[in-house]
Image 1: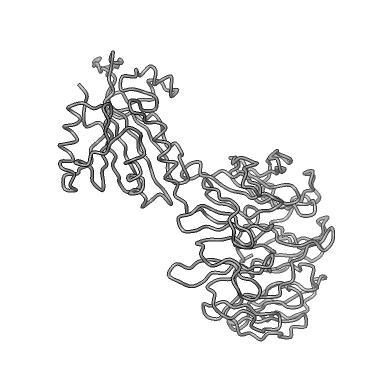
Image 2: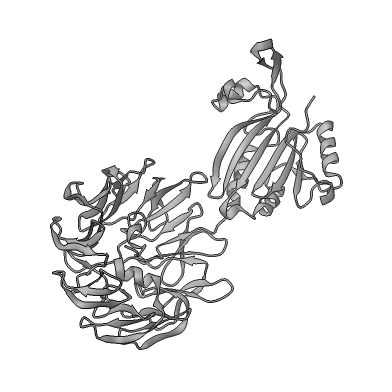
Length: 555
């Protein structure tokens, strides 16, 4: 199908429905529709009466009595309104989710995701999360960065306590006490609310459980399992979607319906087909226009609309001639075509009962994590617990290295690679100098032996910044000035690009580059002090040149 919302459900989308009986779930009837003329949204009732006047840049369906809206401005912000259009939570947030289980997530500029109640009061925040999603079954999924490409997902409860640590490469949301999760191989299975595997990893994709059943993909085909993992509909369809007490199915690139046993009830014959949602009619398309069929597959409203969405209550949204309106089951216009569109959230809700606003991304740059990592590692006389005289044999043991891990004639040796400090920063750590003697052995090449009583030239960190960290190099450099206990800033040689820190044992040269902070650590010697003076002069920008971390050798 062309509506992209459909096939995202296996990872992120959540069913937002109420139970009408034990086997049928239907969308809640909407009393206020967010519709658009031009670029401005307003809310109308099912008769077309304007209830909340045009004023919003974006708007959602009302959930738990509140709607999420975005207001215009240089930096458009989000807030929540009551059904009379008054603000329950002022529009001050850069991002926000809808309310679910009495909680919404919001993100302020430069802030971490924060959980709020209906009054906008803060409940708790989670600084380490990259993404958080709305609460379902009392748990909210969240992700943390593992490296520049990988995130892991875990779950927290309504107190902000992590109850399932991040360990899954992807995760859906809890429903019926289970949640679909993926492992590093990309296989999907299900966990219970304690994080234990309840249905083993084996599926290509997996959807939420609803009334004890879940649609999933095994290989290239879709089927349905029960809560024990037993197939109740064997994998046999190209695609499947739940539609209350039945399923929409795709076979031979056409859409139709089957019952809960997998028996086809409406032959796949439609180019597009959207759910009945427990109603008498469902929108379908065979050519270029949409019409509506009944539960026997008979066309009851002729194909005449450019777009048509499922019925909600007694009305269905349709578009013709570039304008949208609402019809009843007899194809009579309740609200004549006059709108330029409806909100994407309303489309999502009408199609699948879901929301496009179920997650937020952090806007928080955790510079404290970077600073604390360096504070822990750099003392007044040691770095990572090592001195400049620490033998390479001990370094081998400490970092589980062998001689084969090093290029012997290089002057910079990576000991730690891409350590994840925060969502936006990784750390590399190097030992500086050449601890090996080199001997030419003729045609056999060179041989190397460790130098006795070798003193390392220095140590070096590279803090690599990504995402929210880009452009924050100044912040990190500034905080370094006072973060390290026992070090004084050398005002004569520091400037906006370089910070020189010194105590009686160690000399730190901290430099910023785009996307990187370099912290080079040398012993305090006359030669190294002269190096600083030559490279940075009196501290003016014109005197500042990037010093390679092995530029000074300790004799």
